[in-house]
Image (cartoon, rainbow, N blue to C red; front, side, top):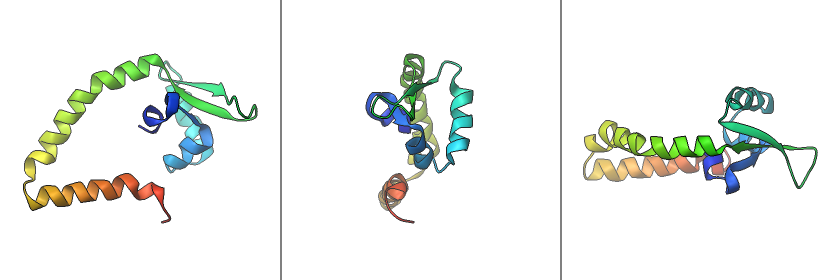
Length: 105
């Protein structure tokens, strides 16, 4: 998700690790497994010492294909079981979850 929302589908490895609450070494292991056509590593243009994780075109295509089924699943499992005030509270909860990594704590 973080890579798909990043400019040009690319993030510094340490930034991606922080966004995912992983250590840099843990993120490196994840990216290594995803280098089977889903993610590539590229030298950072601004700092030749750093590396970026970059989504491949194949991964972007797959995300676009999966998105409609994901939305149907979320609706069926969560939204369809909520109404009125429940839906308002669910929306507020999702907003808090989405921004939880943005601040301290």
